[in-house]
Structures are given as C-alpha cells and as structure tokens.
Length: 350
Image (cartoon, rainbow, N blue to C red):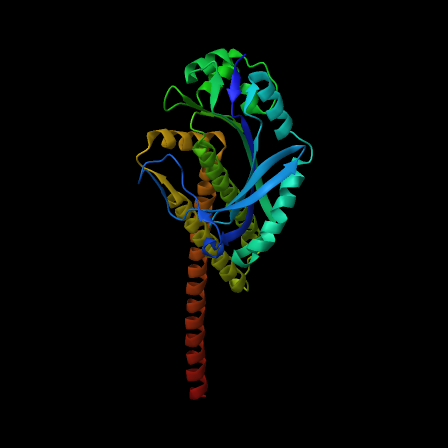
C-alpha cells in the first residue's frame, strides 16, 4: 500500500442562523477560490471568512475557520493535519475515527455559540431553531510511490473515505462512485460521496471542498424555505373550507400572507441563482453541477418550485374569490339602493 503525503481531514458543520446576515458588519476577509481564472467564477456577494484559531478535540489539534454567508448561513470547518506522511490504511482508520468521533456535533455547536453572539448585530430575523448540515473532506497532496488519478482509482479503494464507513466496495459501488470522480490533470482527483469528499491535489488547494460547502449552504437555505412554503400551503385549505359570507377579512389576510410568501421565495430563488456563477471553468462547473445532484440541492430546488407553483395557484384562486365577493357585495348594495328608492317613492305617494 502506498504512503500519502500531507494528509488532512476537515469536518464541516453549517448552520442556518437567520434570514440574512449583513456581511458588511462582519470583520473578516472575503472568500475567493484559489485556482479559478479571472472572471471564470463570479460571486455576487462573497461570504466573509473568519480565522477562529487552533482548537483541540478527541486528542487532535486543528484549525477552525468560519465562513459567513449573506443569506443567513454560517459554515464552520475544522481542519486537522494527520502528519507529514501516512500509510494509506492508516489514513483510512484515522479519518473514519475522526469524522465518527462521539460528541463531534455537540463540540461544533459549542464552537458556534460565541460566534453567534458576536454576529448577533448583523443577523436579520434570527431563527430560533437553526437548520444544520454537515460533511467532511479528506485531502492528500501526493503518494509514494507516485500515483496518477486513474491509477489511484484502479489500485486503491477510496470508497470508505467518502462513504464514512469501512466497506469492501462492490464493482457496482465502485462504478457508481467513479461517475462522481473528476480530474483536471493526471495529478489531481476529486471524488464526491454523499457524506464525504476525497481530494488529491498536489498544490494543496481546497477549492473542491469550498464548492461542496457552497452547495450545502444553498441546501440549508432551500430546506428552510421548503418548510416555509409547506406551512403556507398547509394552512390555506383550512381557511378556504371555513369561509362564510362574513369571512372576507380572513380571506384578505390569507391573500396577503400568500402574496408575502410568494414574494419572499421568489427573491430567495433569484438571490441563490445569482450568488455563484461559473461561466468559463468547465472543471469547476462540472463539480458544482454534480454536487447539487449528489447532495440533493437540485431535487430540493425542484420541490420548492413545485410548491411555489401550487402557492401561485391558490393565490390566484383566492384573488378570484375576493373579486367575486366584491362583485356580489356591489350587486347587493345596488339592489338595496333600488329597493330603498322604490320604498321611498311608494311612501311619497301615500
């Protein structure tokens, strides 16, 4: 088995803290991918990075970094260097032991607490129960003896490193994982799994993990607004069933609520669609597109769109019902005036 050079493991936890975060009020540096060509990757409003220093957990010392996104998400990444060199088998054992360490989730939430207090002035409409996502990445800079990306996939089994468990991968599983493997040259490899990412990069660049983090941040935002839409759709039928002739005000409130939710979700969709644009970098574009499929962001975006269409249909129905009731009210008023005039005329003849 070969030896790997500069092995690292990084663990991410992402938290949806608020509807928005005013990143101009956060003291830090703006994020940028290290390898992208000028203009190839455009960030509408890059998140702000904060270096939170060295932190110890489970007998390992690692560097903690926070990234603050303008759409309300904070990503914590704890990166641990496992040594200068490590046999492949020991890398697998050390990585799986670290990402499965008991108490890791609670420890990451404890690291979030002081940062959340620090960010409080910049949070717009904080959430009482923040959503949470997580993943990890295993990163190496080389092999002894040297291995190309193709040879790595043929001679080694990286499945446990991206699946988070020791498993003897079947031919079918290896073929499935190979569909999510990307190489720009013979000396680099990115392999996306549902729980983890394996990165072989001779320059020690983590751009692939940064793209995966971005997708998880989008996923958190979509999950929150999927819930918002679900609650709006759940309440509408009950209001419609209980409507009577004296419930115009309740109908108007329902219409106003639906209109607000529709405007809110449409704004979020527009913001997410323009937040990250990859136009001239095919390698990163393929990784980002595949990550949205692997981690369910594309499927969830479709579910949000379907719910939004249902909300639009209910909004249209409610608007038509309100128009019908206004028309009926006008007709009743006209008839009442006619009746009153008839009575007035009859009384005048008596």
